[in-house]
Image: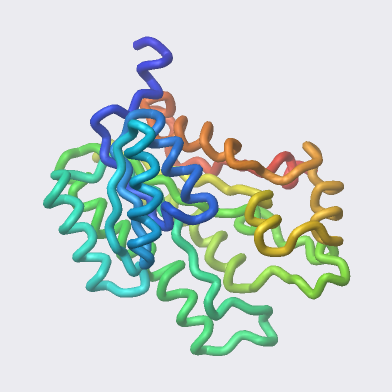
Amino acid sequence: MHTKQLFDLTNKIAVVTGGSGLYGKSISLALAESGATVIIASRNVERCKAFAMKLVDAGMKADAFQLDQGEEDSIQEFVRNVESKYAQIDILVNNSVTRDGMADLDMVTKEGWERAQKVNSTGLVLLTQAVIKGMVDRKQGNIINIGSIQGVAGPRFPVYGDTGMSSPVNYTYDKWGMVGFTKWIANKYGKFNIRCNCISPGGYGPGVDEMIGRNEFYDNYTKLTPLGRFANDDDMKGPIAFLASDASSYVTGHNLLLDGGWSSW
């Protein structure tokens, strides 16, 4: 097969949770540019529809569905609706994350912890469970989990300096679990020709600019990253296109580090 064909996702149906968010836009765009029909999903369906329309207007295939990953009924309805319209889900990108209830350990409350887990852990598992049933029946499927370098190495707290920023204990807990979940899915469902991989990104420049701008954390992070910068909009697209396509047909259970060398020290 020609190399270009290996990356071709024509006729594939790809779901991206949080597909209109910061990383979600790059993920959705990469899949759509590779030929897939991209289903953009989140609680804010109007924002999903607006971004899907931008892709359609640019000549790509996209659609939008509402999904509240913190509610089991919403998850089941979402999968039924997508499969009813498109018959199947070939690719699932678990990208949604909520920061609601996240805090340092001394500030965590039971209620806050459970709010975060409802989406980032329980919801992710229930959505994967619902989607993978069809993949098993067809004996084909591809799942990509979007983790973090916080799921590879412990937080380097001095990088935050005197900004008052921190890395919540919930996030590290969830992202380390995601890597293990990736390997469990890969090992359990490989016999059904279902692959599961994880991408662990480092700091995302547009998100940092939007939320905090240039401060001591920004300067420290770039100094401590071998490539000397945050990730940009295009940096996610290549790894997604690779893992979603037949170009990675013999890759499963892998955690791809997308961190500019941060974890290589």
